[in-house]
Image (cartoon, rainbow, N blue to C red; front, side, top):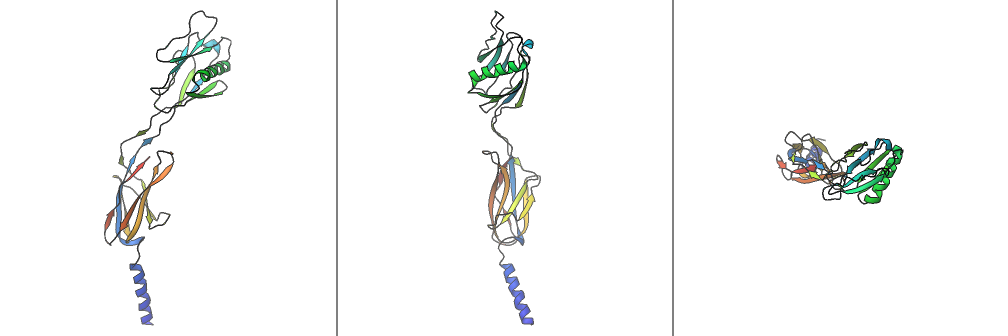
Length: 249
């Protein structure tokens, strides 16, 4: 009986010594994570709340902008009962004339304005109307000056600012989740969070192959992706440093 027990114990010890991955060992994996803020390029979106014709003066105008290097516009209002020229003739911009009468309702002013912009500048803007509010979406991404009411009586707001793509300076990722995968497993086995300098460590590991990874913003799709580093522990009582992980937020 004693011989049998000793044989079983020896077998258990042999299996434990041959373990190649997972927790329960004397080694560690350490590393650092750095992050960069990523700003995706986006288009300008504006909303214009129109008033009735009685509130508009002959020659009133507002400006509609594109990113630098793209055609710029201004919209002006021409009452045919006035003999003077309503066009302010702004240098470097394309004028869009909207004919109006003082009896026009706010919906009619919105409709006429939308129609004229679509006639002249449909390559640059897409427009939708909800009663007397017209939403204008630029078709070119990039840094864009906000639409300005100038002399017009309309209420104009920017609901999304046009921006260029920007990647800010890399810095240590604090309190970032770092995942550890054993061998060729598809799911993580352990989770740690980075410290104040972006450092992390997984302890009590045995010899074997591992993968550490973080979740990062995909700068192309805008979704998420994983940034991975493969690590191999070849001996006991060692600390192996993984390659630096760089992620986008």
